[in-house]
Length: 212
Length: 212
DNA sequence: CCGACTATTGGACTGGTGGACAGGGTCGCC
DNA sequence: GGCGACCCTGTCCACCAGTCCAATAGTCGG
Image (tube, rainbow over all chains, first blue to last red; front, side, top):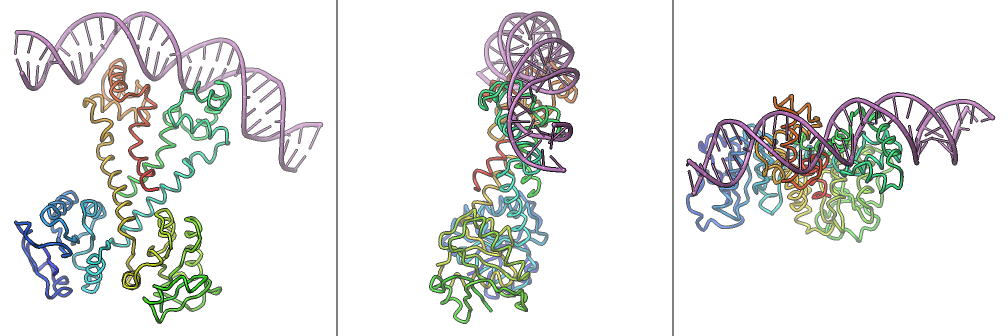
């Protein structure tokens, strides 16, 4: 039932051992024939870059909509894995992984599961969780040094409010808002409200940097 | 080799079928005894909330550092799964999952893999990729309506630059910067640079909303 | 060729912003 | 009781930001 796509069968030594009864083809089947559901389709990334892998997966799914696709790469990359998985691949692993591991992946994916290497998994989960943590206290390291009132003002400003609006919402004078803001600028080492907002919101952006 | 922790063994009917030779204990072993490596430890979340599950996993890993932990829940929650996995759990699944599935999970985790349900996986991956996409063109839907020059100005402003600084960096007059900004405000429906920055950066924040 | 769009700049004006300087009130702690 | 926080308010002032009116010039498609 297992089918692998690779330009040179020699590149798939371990896969051959894992699935002796499997087929290795040089290219995707031209027709979307009756090669229906459930079937496992192993794609060897070869020299494709991250975007190329993603497109290949998408193309394969257009031809064989219900295929369970696992992408194998000789030089696994996290970005490539994300692209592949986002396009519908059910797994991403090293092309030279041990036959036992390949079989295990085959079982998991064949039963409707997904396989992602522990490193990528840890990285994605760690990033997501860091974001969740920092979202609970939108400042984590940034706003924790502020007094409650300063924090409240900073939060309002981060939502785009002017001093006058903050004053009205918090029931204080515009002058007081300025005072809290001045203290906040000093503590956080920013020069104006714009940098404040960027500082407060960058914790979310941190995910992008840490994942990609 | 398999060990499950649950206050009432009756709650783990399917697990019992999956691992007839397994042991079910009411609580974590008090000592960090010689119950070393490789061993699978199945924790039943019972009535713990997301944070509680995370703490439990962390506590278990402190006592048995090399345990492979899988968390089972009668009412799986994505947030709880994130907490558990972030604290070092290797898997998260439904407590009443079919014995076959539980055994499969045991194989994967026992061999160093991780198990995450397809739904959570899809959600996390989708969110991460949405973020990556929006980061490639930080405007996706926001800045795409702008002219190249307006976009450039908006990008500088989003980094915290003043009009004067933008003018210097782009080699134009401060007056021109204002003109581009005015057009940008109009197109995006924002009233000032602060809301502009929020709009540009909120694509990143979208991840938090979609994951949690 | 002409209209639509974009890029560029000028002047004048209004309102928001941030800093400087100067207070007063409450609360907890040594 | 001082002393140090945090919270609140005031005035004056320089500067920045955003808008209105107005103008020149290049590009692109009909």
